[in-house]
Amino acid sequence: MRRTGTAWLMAVLGCVLVASGAFAQAPPARFEVRSAYVEPAEGVFELNATLNFDLPEGARAAIREGVPLTVHLEIVVKRKRSYWLDETVATLDQSYELAYRALSERYLVRNLNSGEQASYATLDAALDALRVISRLPILDQALVSPNRRHEISVRGNLDVRTMPDALRFVLFWSDDWRQRSEWYTWSPQL
Image (cartoon, rainbow, N blue to C red; front, side, top):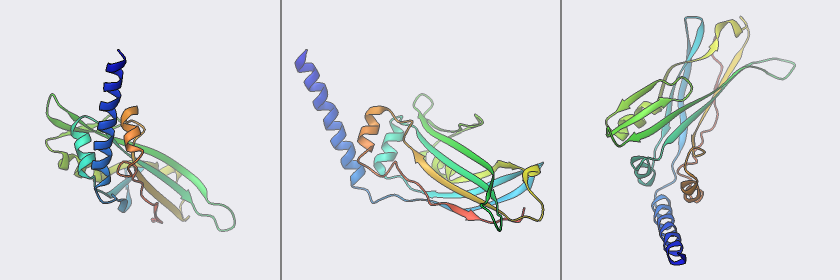
């Protein structure tokens, strides 16, 4: 029994070393919000944004092996004030999950907030879908004060909290799965 436990531990350590080596060889990945804007539609303002992120081959291989990737967006809408702190009008946490389904040999992108999902034949097609956020309702038009200046901030990150514990240990040594963008902030005319 002890020999089996030792062999299992050695196998796990070997996988950790191989996986961490695969992640460490890649150049540091970068995550950024490239562009974002809002437009009115049926009583709400909808966000359209373009994200830029690349995954190294080690991360791509993990996805192909069934490890889900979660892209998380934080959206904050504030009303600017001249003589006092800005007022937070709305906040939204939006998450998307990318997972490989071996049975159908398809990549599934699912909106974790609404449950909407789409299926893609390739990993690159699924990643391209995650990079473009279209018509995401973020703010009820009734919350907007006319003739007041508003500011919208968007930040994205790759979420590893949904990873299995053993894989989280491996990813602790790699920045590939801990990508976070800076805040992208603009003042739209609402």
